[in-house]
Length: 214
Image (cartoon, rainbow, N blue to C red; front, top):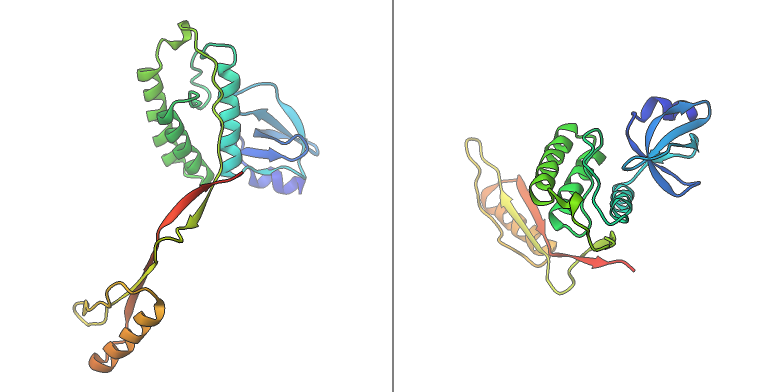
């Protein structure tokens, strides 16, 4: 496992340490220990390299929010450190949206998309939060709230098929929205009997809602 950690986790990757229950940036390895640095900066600590794993998107966001809370706890926003990724200002929806976009790109190892989200986050903070280092700020705690995405039971899903048979162009005939897959399959059978077409593109659509956990 120690060998796996050294080979598969890049320096700077957020990892989760189950022994301490913390997320930290992977800095390197010393024997059987992984060296981790707190998100947002701070004193490094040693974690068992056989136990740490890459942090989930939810764990990364939660750690970023905690770091933002810690930064604002002193009543002032700190001076921007360009050597570290910008943290969302607690209570700012624009900061949070850009930080979520950055973390999603980071979770998919998409460096270009991560940079594309990081740059507008810095630009937004310079434009809308510039000068706040000299103004006392009312202490607020921004909490990350987890949600679960579920199908909306009050709305019927829709099934549909479109014929894409044809040598030069698709037939284009469509079943139209149907309440279930059986109706679509019956339309396909009839269409095949009438035209001898056998290739279809099927689609499914539904409505989803986010339910707050806890």
